[in-house]
Length: 519
Image (cartoon, rainbow, N blue to C red; front, side):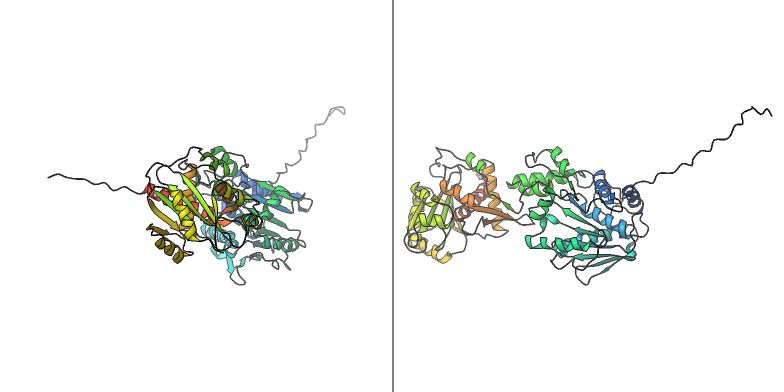
């Protein structure tokens, strides 16, 4: 071989190193391979995470050196978007030994406003394990309540979020569920829970729909530098009837929550006359679903007519709220055919003047101005005198037959006696103010005003009373009138809903049809 001949040496290629997938991707693959969706419109299909759900896992597993990038994550989305199932999947990924994210000797905690809420995530964990045929791996101890969940050597403590709970714990992950429902005194538990993640360099998840809880809304709107906010919500000015807005707050619409359900919820809210609860729970808007106005001023103003006059001889329905020494006696007259509304109020004049009452009730000179407008009278005595009030009411009714008088049972005997002494034979309907009668009366009133089925001349008394009244909405959706503050007067509004409800029932009543056959 010639010395100058070049010798070819083989090139040694560096071995290819397969890049490991991020933890959130590996967890998502494990979930899809291990579990199936236990219920809902995708029941039986592999538990595959949606892109918006992957966002939470990506931020949760993000690292800053050896520590979590985020000390806290606030995750807020509309109802029925898989929040509970996602939390259950995350805890299973941390607790199951075959998971790529398994943490040996994991310790976690779930806190919620009530025992029922604290069991949402554990029940979802059980459902996933049962559907996967692994139910025997998950153990639950009921004591101390709400309980403790075990998978292998991993522990998940459940609590209802009192101030002392969390104290003395050492946790890798704490989930505070249904944060939007936390009451003011329950938010003190967060301090104890924050201390519980210190020694394990853990994390906190704040989860829920916004609701009207000040604590959760403050986290969402003003997060600290170590808190990540993941928020799916419609903006306050968005059109609640726009399907594009629905998807903004419901990224799982059509896959997790049926579109038909969303439309039905929208139509039901529209029919009820208030979209507040729909916007708060189904669109995650920054509203106060627990309290609403009966009628907003814009809707009331549309009902004003300067020339509003009843049809001669048409029947009327009267709503009466009988007051005591501090409160007003009020009546609303609703004309069945024309939809005309008239209101009248009365205070006892013995103890306080109208000016003094206005200062006490925090409405300034409103009562004096209502009296000057002829909508409010004073009676003798320390309690509104019905013998003086009824003639004023009869004068406002005019030459019209009274089809019904609706009132509550307060001062029932006195009211019946006053009618008998005045030789008035009005048919009386006694209504409750609770979630049955009260809810129906409120919804009927809203329906009439929104449909433009009632008219009235501008009323200072009604405007002032509407501003003082709140509609409290329970978690079941039932409505009930409530004072906006301790000295608020809602007597006129109470009489309004009674009269409007009676008028609507009369309008909706099926008229009998008679057939005459001549033989």
